[in-house]
Length: 172
Image (cartoon, rainbow, N blue to C red):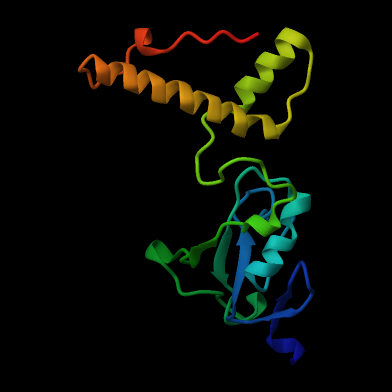
């Protein structure tokens, strides 16, 4: 590829990204700052940085490289008021294969616990740290409690779960 037609190189595989070509950036602000400047030639290359980036939630954003070098002229078609129009499209979330350690339990069910609050509570009451893997089994217990509360409300002919519907649980 001719040097004059190369915009930048992929941050993962170092392949050239040509002028005007589609490329990927990370949705997390610390990865897409001007100083950091991570760009990826494909979603697969974007996924390579996830294990070391330690993002809570991220996805690849597709962008388009400028059609001409910045020093040669305007990089994109101007939008309203003469500002360059960003060309961004949400492309992908990380696949399960890109996660370092899969969490146990069903992956389709959402986590019901606010991790920061749980970790703060455990640290304040005991001084212990809390693993991320605690969230799924704890959420599963909460789901079972909620299911029983819904059954109790339904049995009484209500469509509103009240505090009295929550079952007493003896944990020893």
